[in-house]
Amino acid sequence: MIEELRVFIKKVMSDPTIAVKSMEIARKYKGEANADELMAREISANTTIRIPESWSEADKMFLEILHEVLDDEEALY
Image 1 (cartoon, rainbow, N blue to C red):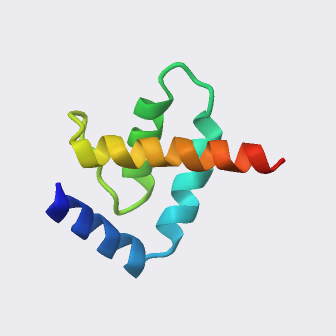
Image 2: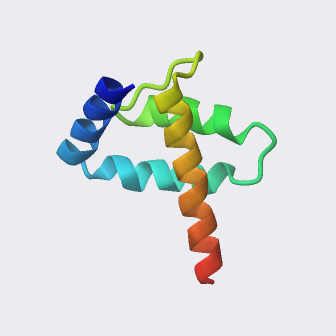
């Protein structure tokens, strides 16, 4: 998992739009019954981040973090 996270962090550092796009996509699907699946599919289609159909622990962690950031945003308002 460490190596996968390392590759992910390098991608985010080399393309700062990944975080912005990922958050936009997460906001779009927030509250949907299958939000994680929809987010994973659209993030994979629109960024250099590839989330396969069979999620690794790192993929699950990334999706969880997106939800946490959305919750933090909501708490600010």
